[in-house]
Image 1 (cartoon, rainbow, N blue to C red):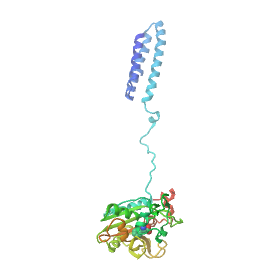
Image 2: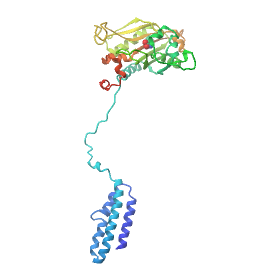
Image 3: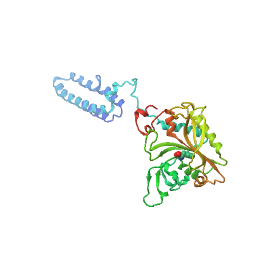
Image 4: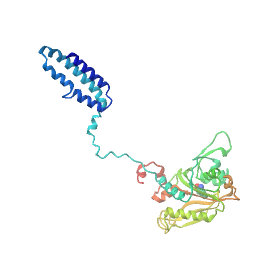
Length: 342
Ligand code: PHE
């Protein structure tokens, strides 16, 4: 009897040591620890012993049983599932995960990108911290040029040299990427450049130190003003609807010649005059022109052989118009009450 008990104990301990899965746990439980298991069987057989032996073995059997149960329950807990899982109802609706969404500027940017990639333009980008040279000088605005005054920005001096052209600026427009693109890809070239720009502004509802533009650029043989007008008309119709008209009025930008301001009929009042267009019926949205020969040269392109057109849209302004936002500062405010409306 004694050795039978000892053998069983050794056997069970060995089995417990070998447990690898919940299935093993179940098997051992059934075979040894259940009501009809081998342990119960031995306990049962005690009743067939003489009173004396029963006393002797009873104590030993009970002690062994307890030890085995303890050893088993320690291992068992590692393999059985968390108690809570037994109450888990997988058919209940889950806790919804919070999802973000696109920023209104990004939504407009993607719309514009779709339009232009459909017209065969590529999308390129350039640095926001730009050299003074690319942001101004290469765009026909050498140091001390008065046109620089209109685009005051944040300057980062390199501290080593008093050569202004080595200084860095937070770019005031996306136009410096015209030069970078021409230098990198040469002619012919069709590209748009969406991106963030910066100016040192006294901020108010219409001015912000950080805003978005997108530049368009087309360089090739015989690119002329009608190409520019046609392209801007297509963009207007796509952005503001089929009735949209374009008018172009002369405006000076040092990097284009001739330069102009593109205006579209106000899509809110259809040109009749309203608060948004300040009763004029027209929305001033894009600066444009034919690329100045000096700018082509700075881009490494021969102005005798090639010509080009360029335009710059205020992306932030487009978003304001499209969504009826009356304060440009809201876009960068991080105010969720504003952003969650899109
Ligand atoms: N870069 C000009 C601005 O920010 C816009 C522009 C781009 C004008 C291209 C003409 C051609 O005001």
